Image (cartoon, rainbow, N blue to C red; front, side, top):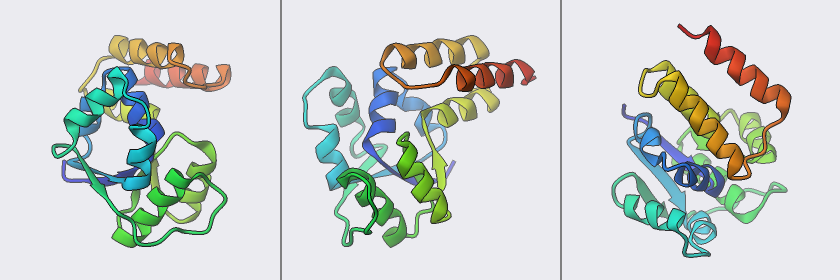
Length: 161
Protein backbone atom coordinates (compact mmCIF):
# COMPACT_ATOMS: atom_id res chain seq x y z
CA UNK A 1 0.00 0.00 0.00
CA UNK A 2 1.53 3.29 -1.06
CA UNK A 3 -0.50 5.93 0.74
CA UNK A 4 0.66 8.88 2.76
CA UNK A 5 -1.47 10.56 5.40
CA UNK A 6 -1.14 13.47 7.80
CA UNK A 7 -2.12 12.77 11.41
CA UNK A 8 -3.43 14.59 14.39
CA UNK A 9 -2.32 13.34 17.81
CA UNK A 10 -5.46 11.57 18.98
CA UNK A 11 -5.65 8.75 16.41
CA UNK A 12 -1.95 7.95 16.82
CA UNK A 13 -2.21 7.93 20.62
CA UNK A 14 -5.35 5.76 20.54
CA UNK A 15 -3.72 3.21 18.22
CA UNK A 16 -0.71 3.15 20.54
CA UNK A 17 -2.92 2.64 23.63
CA UNK A 18 -4.35 -0.53 22.06
CA UNK A 19 -0.93 -1.60 20.76
CA UNK A 20 -2.11 -1.42 17.15
CA UNK A 21 0.14 1.08 15.37
CA UNK A 22 1.02 -1.77 13.00
CA UNK A 23 -2.55 -1.72 11.67
CA UNK A 24 -1.94 1.78 10.31
CA UNK A 25 1.11 0.36 8.50
CA UNK A 26 -1.23 -1.95 6.58
CA UNK A 27 -2.86 1.10 4.99
CA UNK A 28 -0.19 3.81 4.97
CA UNK A 29 3.48 3.66 4.08
CA UNK A 30 4.13 7.04 5.70
CA UNK A 31 2.30 9.19 8.22
CA UNK A 32 3.33 12.83 8.40
CA UNK A 33 3.28 14.36 11.88
CA UNK A 34 3.48 18.17 12.02
CA UNK A 35 5.83 19.38 14.77
CA UNK A 36 2.90 20.92 16.68
CA UNK A 37 1.25 17.48 16.76
CA UNK A 38 4.50 15.82 17.85
CA UNK A 39 4.63 18.29 20.77
CA UNK A 40 1.13 17.18 21.82
CA UNK A 41 2.01 13.50 21.53
CA UNK A 42 5.26 13.73 23.47
CA UNK A 43 4.21 16.19 26.18
CA UNK A 44 4.24 13.22 28.60
CA UNK A 45 6.62 10.30 28.56
CA UNK A 46 4.32 7.26 28.78
CA UNK A 47 4.46 3.68 27.50
CA UNK A 48 2.24 4.84 24.61
CA UNK A 49 4.63 7.58 23.56
CA UNK A 50 7.58 5.18 23.73
CA UNK A 51 5.80 2.93 21.18
CA UNK A 52 5.17 5.94 18.96
CA UNK A 53 8.82 7.10 19.20
CA UNK A 54 9.93 3.66 18.00
CA UNK A 55 8.00 4.27 14.76
CA UNK A 56 9.65 7.62 13.97
CA UNK A 57 11.79 7.24 10.88
CA UNK A 58 9.89 4.06 9.95
CA UNK A 59 6.20 4.94 9.71
CA UNK A 60 6.15 8.51 11.07
CA UNK A 61 7.94 11.55 9.72
CA UNK A 62 7.91 14.85 11.60
CA UNK A 63 7.66 18.02 9.49
CA UNK A 64 7.41 21.76 10.04
CA UNK A 65 4.32 23.37 8.55
CA UNK A 66 4.78 26.66 6.76
CA UNK A 67 1.23 27.95 7.21
CA UNK A 68 -1.55 27.72 9.74
CA UNK A 69 -5.08 27.67 8.38
CA UNK A 70 -7.44 30.01 10.23
CA UNK A 71 -10.08 27.64 11.63
CA UNK A 72 -11.39 27.35 15.19
CA UNK A 73 -9.56 24.16 16.17
CA UNK A 74 -6.67 23.32 18.45
CA UNK A 75 -3.07 23.99 17.43
CA UNK A 76 -2.39 20.37 16.43
CA UNK A 77 -5.54 19.94 14.38
CA UNK A 78 -4.92 23.25 12.56
CA UNK A 79 -1.31 22.28 11.84
CA UNK A 80 -2.31 18.86 10.52
CA UNK A 81 -5.00 20.24 8.21
CA UNK A 82 -2.61 22.99 7.05
CA UNK A 83 0.00 20.32 6.34
CA UNK A 84 -2.51 18.35 4.23
CA UNK A 85 -3.23 21.43 2.14
CA UNK A 86 0.43 22.53 1.84
CA UNK A 87 1.69 19.04 0.99
CA UNK A 88 -1.26 18.16 -1.25
CA UNK A 89 -1.91 15.05 0.86
CA UNK A 90 -5.63 14.36 0.88
CA UNK A 91 -5.77 11.84 3.75
CA UNK A 92 -6.15 13.14 7.30
CA UNK A 93 -6.09 10.95 10.42
CA UNK A 94 -8.12 12.28 13.33
CA UNK A 95 -10.73 11.25 15.85
CA UNK A 96 -11.62 14.82 16.74
CA UNK A 97 -15.21 15.38 15.56
CA UNK A 98 -14.82 19.10 14.80
CA UNK A 99 -11.56 18.52 12.92
CA UNK A 100 -13.27 15.76 10.92
CA UNK A 101 -16.05 18.14 9.84
CA UNK A 102 -13.59 20.86 8.79
CA UNK A 103 -11.42 18.35 6.91
CA UNK A 104 -14.37 16.89 5.04
CA UNK A 105 -15.41 20.43 4.11
CA UNK A 106 -11.96 20.80 2.53
CA UNK A 107 -12.46 17.53 0.59
CA UNK A 108 -9.95 15.60 2.67
CA UNK A 109 -10.47 11.88 3.18
CA UNK A 110 -10.71 11.28 6.92
CA UNK A 111 -9.65 8.14 8.75
CA UNK A 112 -10.09 7.61 12.47
CA UNK A 113 -9.11 4.70 14.63
CA UNK A 114 -12.39 2.85 13.96
CA UNK A 115 -12.02 3.24 10.18
CA UNK A 116 -8.45 1.92 10.42
CA UNK A 117 -9.72 -1.10 12.36
CA UNK A 118 -12.59 -1.62 9.88
CA UNK A 119 -10.17 -1.42 6.92
CA UNK A 120 -8.01 -4.11 8.53
CA UNK A 121 -11.07 -6.27 9.18
CA UNK A 122 -12.42 -5.96 5.63
CA UNK A 123 -8.95 -6.69 4.20
CA UNK A 124 -8.59 -9.74 6.46
CA UNK A 125 -5.64 -8.37 8.44
CA UNK A 126 -7.63 -8.96 11.65
CA UNK A 127 -10.63 -11.18 12.33
CA UNK A 128 -13.98 -10.24 13.87
CA UNK A 129 -13.08 -11.34 17.38
CA UNK A 130 -9.86 -9.29 17.26
CA UNK A 131 -11.81 -6.30 15.93
CA UNK A 132 -14.32 -6.54 18.79
CA UNK A 133 -11.50 -6.94 21.32
CA UNK A 134 -9.79 -3.80 19.99
CA UNK A 135 -13.01 -1.74 19.97
CA UNK A 136 -13.71 -2.77 23.57
CA UNK A 137 -10.10 -1.98 24.51
CA UNK A 138 -10.49 1.48 22.98
CA UNK A 139 -13.55 2.06 25.12
CA UNK A 140 -11.67 1.06 28.27
CA UNK A 141 -9.08 3.68 27.25
CA UNK A 142 -11.70 6.46 27.32
CA UNK A 143 -12.58 6.36 23.61
CA UNK A 144 -15.93 8.11 23.32
CA UNK A 145 -18.48 6.19 21.29
CA UNK A 146 -22.23 6.45 21.58
CA UNK A 147 -24.23 3.28 22.22
CA UNK A 148 -25.90 3.81 18.82
CA UNK A 149 -22.55 4.04 17.00
CA UNK A 150 -21.29 0.94 18.86
CA UNK A 151 -24.45 -0.92 17.83
CA UNK A 152 -24.06 0.24 14.20
CA UNK A 153 -20.42 -0.95 14.13
CA UNK A 154 -21.34 -4.35 15.58
CA UNK A 155 -24.21 -4.75 13.08
CA UNK A 156 -21.88 -3.79 10.24
CA UNK A 157 -19.23 -6.36 11.14
CA UNK A 158 -21.79 -9.11 11.63
CA UNK A 159 -23.06 -8.44 8.09
CA UNK A 160 -19.48 -8.69 6.78
CA UNK A 161 -18.70 -12.00 5.10
